[in-house]
Image (tube, rainbow, N blue to C red; front, top):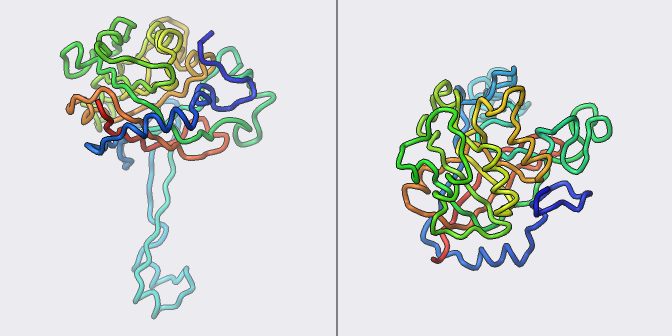
Amino acid sequence: MSKIQSSGAGEIGRLESMTPATQAAVIGRLDGRGTYDLAVEFFVGMPAWTAAGDPRFEIWMTHTPSGTVNDDLSAAGRTANERYSYAGSAFSMYSHTGTHVCSLTHIGRDGRFWSGWTQETHMGSRSWLVGGVCPPIVARGVLADVAGARKVERLPPSYVITPADLSAALDGTTVERGDVVLVRTGQMTLWPDPDAFLATPPGLGMEAAKFLADVLSVMCVGVDCGGEALPPEQPDTFLPVHAYLLAEAGMPVVENLWLEDLAAAGIKEFAFLAAPLKLRGSTGCPVRPLALTIDG
């Protein structure tokens, strides 16, 4: 098992290793040189996992200025509706759309999830009774630009990232216990073409996942696409890297990160700030992560 362990009753896995002291340490190093937005935009037609029938991102108007004048659904009256233009919108999507954090309830192994959770004992009628709510993540972040280290724009389709790839990308950068490591494959150079971006993405292999969890003892990992190489290395498996990281290592996985600007700037060490939406019982939570420059 991995070096950073949950207490068993905790619902946030390795995020428990964050303390006010560790957060203050990295915040105290902010130098104000730059802030990098690591999230993608949500829009109709964006790349999204729909192969298994999950809903794509949709947005629609619930109120339009001219429509409100005509139907007066707000009951404000025609004079007010003509004077004050009212517009409203709603959206729907699969919780693993865009930049998001995979909760520890997302993928299990043999019916068991993190901390021994099972659907028989920890699931309600409409959602899990555990997971889906994470604390704000404030930690030291490190960029592992695997594509850059290999001097390619992006890794080949279905390329399996190895521990050697990670070591080469991290050369000269120390990874500390409890860090957040962000892995760049270059797959975002294909965004926002859904077919090109989603088809046979590169990503972490099992040995690389264990290297991050067991050897480097990182708290959280993020990737600029779906996390692991697809199709999987081994036959008769389904997202085995996710199953290991989430169900065994208790490590949240951030997917679909925009790392192009960070890599272009040559920034390998930074403060990582992310506040996942508090969606009780959800298997995934949209998030808008930031990388803030620090001294050194």
